[in-house]
Image (cartoon, rainbow, N blue to C red; front, side):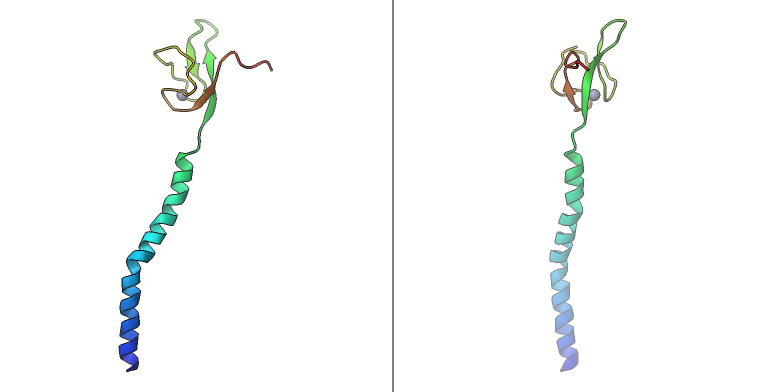
Length: 86
Ligand SMILES: [Zn+2]
């Protein structure tokens, strides 16, 4: 009788496994979601010589040369190049 009960318990435990695995996977996913939502902040910069617009985060030059709210290359949130007064 004791052995039979043990077997039932083991079976229940195995049945519960997929649910436990789902919980574990959900927990594992949480930090990754948070990580992907971290927004980098930078500023549009202009080269002193030609005044070419570039991103301070990735140093890439956008083809449009327009100061968009976000860098089209790396997706960083960028403030306009003229918006700093020390
Ligand atoms: Zn960038």
